[in-house]
Image 1 (cartoon, rainbow, N blue to C red):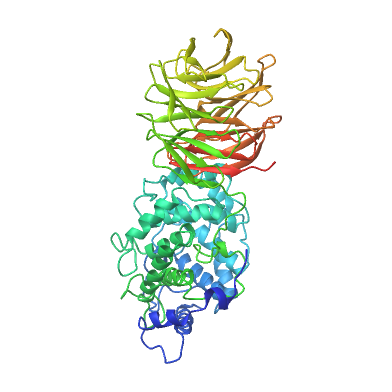
Image 2 (cartoon, helix red, strand yellow):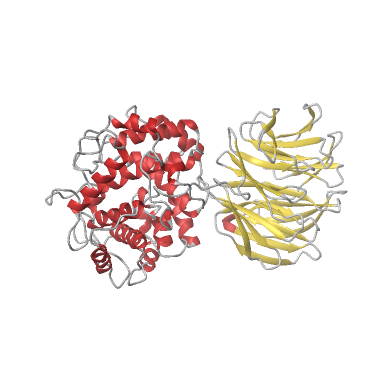
Amino acid sequence: MVVTSRAGRWSLTIVAVLLCANALAGVAAGQTLSDDVYRGLREFYRRTARTDGSFQPGIDPSYQGMSDSAFSDMAAVTYACVIHKTFGWELPHREKTVEWLLARQQPGGEFVNVTGTVDPRSPQGRTYNTTQALVALRALGERPHFDPLPVFEEIMRQDYKTLPAYSTSFFPLAYLCAGKPIPAQADKAIRALMVQAGDGYLNDHVAATFHASHYYSLVGEPTPKAELMVARMLRDQNPNGGWLLNTPSRDRHATFDAVFTLRHEGGGQPDCQAAISRAAKWALSCRNADGGFGHFPGSTSDADAVYFQVGTLVMAGVLAPADPLPSDPHLLGWGHLMPLRKPAASDPVRVTLPAWVGGLGFSPDGKQLAIACADGVTQLTDSRSGRLLAALKGHSDCVAAAAFSPDGRRLTTGSFDHTANIRDLQTGMVAHPLVGHAGAVLSVAYAPGGSHVATASIDQTIRLWDAFTGQHERTLRGHKSWVNSIAFMPDNERLISGSSDGTVRVWSVASGELLKTIEATPAEVRSIAISPDGKLVAAGIRYGVIKLWNTSDWSERRSWTSAGDDVWAVAFSTDSKRLFSAAGEWNRPAAVVAWDVDTGEEIARHQHTGEVLCLAVSPDGRQLAAAGGDRTVSVWTLRP
């Protein structure tokens, strides 16, 4: 992480001071707005600090708090610790605060509230209190007496499903504060709860949407549907700069939540920066004469509101945190100091399409990627930049498969309209429509020698065609259900197919004779791949199963279960040493996993933004592409 200077990144410009000066009364001439806010905050905490190390929810000792500060007495203490750490201030009674926090931990690991509306024994109470206490202790540089992680392990057995939608990012935050990443199975389970609508939002709520953005930021992965999420968030901002879309009690933190999301998902685009600046003015309008902040303009100063309004001002650059930043700034509260995730060399190129994607194919030189889309159009893109090169029409229904000829001059596509097309890429025209299937064409493949092209269909058949003339040569019959995937062996003499009838079959290209039937599964074979050296055949099977066979004698070499649902796609690396697999989880982000062929161990993971229905590896082995149901294609650069 690079920490920019206070003067460079965080200082208030003269313009910003002038814009905000009118928002506050009592700022003396020549005195900066930020100094006045800092002084007010110090006074607020002086007046709310208790001698036992805890903090009142507000100035008035009888005030019971609102939102988090009413929910649990842990909130006011945690937010006081976080604010003081943010600005490098000493707590009024630091040692007492540490004692107070540690005294709230039970031998089982959970932290409990004594006052507040939440039941400390409930899953929500245990999740909330334990996470907040871990954040506070981390800010103070202290460790809990007992291991807190068994609390989350127990909740992840079943109770996590009962928690509110805004609880998702509590889990990675708590684990990271305890010094460990969230376990893979817990990560998968929480992601399954974060089901996004078409506009990227969760539960039609800014807070639930924020927690998804916060979740993916904590685990260091791109947020699914981020562009859509940002677009709606910009539309939802009110003219006053806030995000009150529902009743006030439901949207108390909405402005902070929206600013975090725009900052981390907006890529620094000008409209996001402008929206954040408007949000800062709104947050300043919530400041009171006692130095604290309310949840809305005119509402009582509240410990919970102070954190979220101050956090908004920090993210907007109106208030400057300590320089240098505190250690582990991403774990301080709800992300107001979280560094922006910088694109890494390993980050994928992403292309957004108008419809879901059913098939991918690299050109022989690896420079172009054909994308088969459900809107009936095949998109040709530059594989390294994602730039659109051509939109190829010619089908009347979803395009489900695409494959380049070995010489790169033709492209064959298969469609739900029961046809396949051989297109001349020099003219852009369909040279040969392939007609004859009685159902959707799900897979197409070229023989390595380039003389044959094969198509596979829901109608249970495979058809072989002359790749140059489009003439039908023969039909391969024998499968009892959909033929989902086909590939030619490197010897040009055999064709392998995988079907929903649970079999993998080997066919003679010359005669169409069925040479071998492998009873792969009682379920469905979703995808097949042949290693470039011709020694192995892989099958992706429903319910997460992957199998490998030796082509020398068709003995099963290995079988294992991958996390996820149906394995819709498998593909070998060009050196035949790795197998990539992708699972399709309905409306959920999925990863492309790289497996060591010799050991069956996972060796790498590439996170996509949605379910993955298709994979492709470039002929030079340097790129991996994945796409599927979320209308997005990811292209990663692979290490040698």
